[in-house]
Length: 407
Image (cartoon, rainbow, N blue to C red; front, top):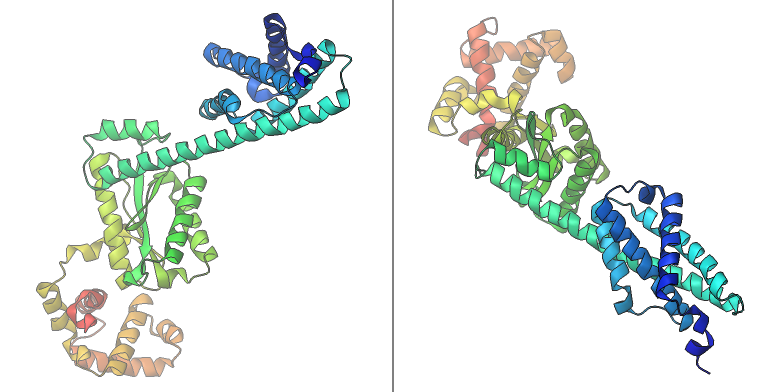
């Protein structure tokens, strides 16, 4: 006598299969909130059809004393993929299969009261593990495909924005909404990349930047964040800029590297609309470049704080201006030149408060006074003159952008 014949009671009639599928449907909807909340008629029909297939496969597997083969699982796997798009959590799918096996076991006891229930119980548990594992794998793979598709779409959208290739503002707003983002309000472009080109492409740096991209996208869901060849590029809602900066700083600190030495963050200007977002990105790139030179000890560089220096074109005109103001200082040996430049920076930072500047430099105020007199002699002016201070301070800030600083 074959196993199939021995368990002939487990061969269901169409009426039995329909009845058991209905009980399964009601049981899952009652015990699993995610399924109980389904109100779309089309999704309900899909769910009911899946339950019918689950019942048929369960009884067939126990009747034939085996687990389902891949081809038989296709319908349940396809169902799991659809659940992912329907927003049903993976935990709810696991829960539904546990409830389903319990309901189907009660149905089995009704149609086969004389069978070897101990052996069948083991098969039933194996079946639950088998199908739930197959469904979960299909669900996760579909989720990964969806995430990759979303990342690809986000990368294409952001590339069009920063390259000024988007047709118009309405198109950008619509495409962003397709990705679950609201681009109707002000946003700020941000770029995270190597500082001073010190960060050479490497697996380590790529992993750090990928970590920033992942953490920023998770912490600020309303942001558009992608990893491009230039680094991490993001378009962040204006009201989320503080949170975004905190995430970036935390991610770089957690990487174990010295963030300010290896990376620089360029912060653009608030903007709405495709063309203005492209300008915000260009501002972020410029802030990254200027900040890495002018503020190398800092990590985040905002264009709003550096825009003054973008009024000057790098080249002969800037070099001539700086050389005219600072030539006597630049002709000193490197040690003395640096000492004088540091003293000027300290006095300007301290708003001309010499005692405060001296404390910051770690020298006696008389020593600083002597240096200032020497600087005034060299440069031919007095720090009591507002115009002289302005010209010297501006020349000092522009100095890192000149040819003299690169020699």
